[in-house]
Amino acid sequence: MMVNNTMSDKKTRVVVGMSGGVDSSVTALLLKEQGYDVVGVFMKNWDDTDENGVCTATEDYKDVALVANKIGIPYYSINFEKEYWNKVFSYFLEEYENGRTPNPDVMCNKEIKFKAFLDYALSLGAEYVATGHYARVRRDEDGTAHLLKGLDGNKDQTYFLNQLSQDQLAKVLFPLGEMDKKEVRKIAEEAGLATANKKDSTGICFIGEKDFKSFLMSYLPAQPGDMVTTDGEVMNTHDGLMYYTIGQRKGLGIGGTGESNDPWFVIGKDLEKNELIVGQGYHHPNLYATHLKASDFSFTTSEERPETFKCRAKFRYRQSDVGVTVHLNKEDSTAIVEFDEPARAITPGQAIVLYDGEECIGGGTIDVAYKETNQLQYV
RNA sequence: UGGGCUAUGGCCAAGCGGUAAGGCAACGGUUUUUGGUACCGUCAUUCCCAGGUUCGAAUCCUGGUAGCCCAG
Image 1: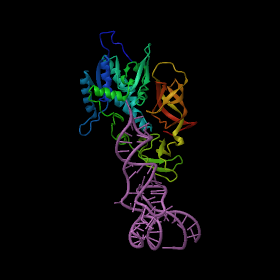
Image 2: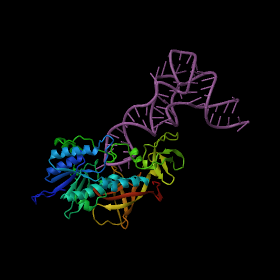
Image 3: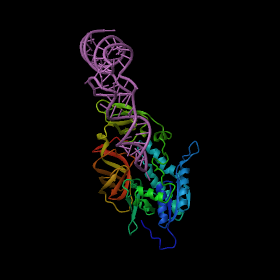
Image 4: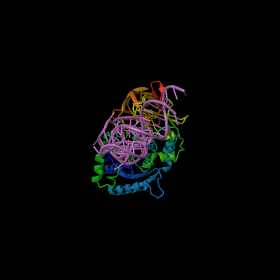
């Protein structure tokens, strides 16, 4: 992680992706203090200007300016709306059309932040690109970069970074990986950064705090249908399969039935019949899978992998990892992943991310979930 | 139109004369760089309607109304 700057009188240039939040602000500050030639760049990926001409990107860019000036670094803005639309948003819509649940942030990191943006940074003469991700990169003597979980286990964001390649990781710095959120806030406060107490942003960047359902509705046609149990009993109607994901509870609107008052969950989708399959109880058997099939499998290092190996894995963000056995098909970059214990709500479109101890070794996209020999009707 | 049973918030459902449990749903919030999950909070001045008994009733009585079941 440390880079030797003393060899040359020319300081190593690092371009920091500044979002206008605390994390990236402190990232820039720390790198500046470490002696790098820091350049702050704000990425504009989405135009969210509303009827009143208010745009959160504009507001965020103002914060970037305040912070950059405070730290004493130059800052710029770069527009990737086109790239974002083509690489992330179109994928996002397509996945939803297919009844799957995409993870746009994984795609954004793979295609925008650590590709388009990285290329741009390199063109500015930077050696590295840095972001405020809670993850670590450790470099071997031979130059291999290893992606490690952030030390703040509660904030670890390697899940979203699983698709990064060795070439990308080689050019990346994550200064916050060593600390926890509290420290970051404290540093920002002590340095008097304008973003010190700014609320953490959550939600898909282009949707922001707005209602997810109405956002999707404005891009994809809604096709209402029935909510049915595995026995075919109609429980309610749904507004469109894309508004629901496996394991979801909210929004089903199914009340008590007399037999049991347990909540209901989405346990499957039937695209042909346009039916949402629902089941009662958090531990509904159809919610548990024994293995899955994934595609677009990639690894963070170029290390040769055996066809079959054991490791740990996560199927969703902020979930503790579980033991798995991976069966790779190197021909088409797919894999069958078996779980040591049945896993709940495995969702097509989401990422399966592999870990070897602290190291995030790679991952893929979940396509199909299975329960023993049966394919779960998840899409 | 003989007999029996039940009517409590959007849905289930406690309550059995002492001043409306709980769950589900919904809504709001917390957590969260996806969606989701989880967690917290809010949700019947009123118990099908009308009378009556009582200091006091959702709880007892009478009469309606509605639904269910068994007999036709």
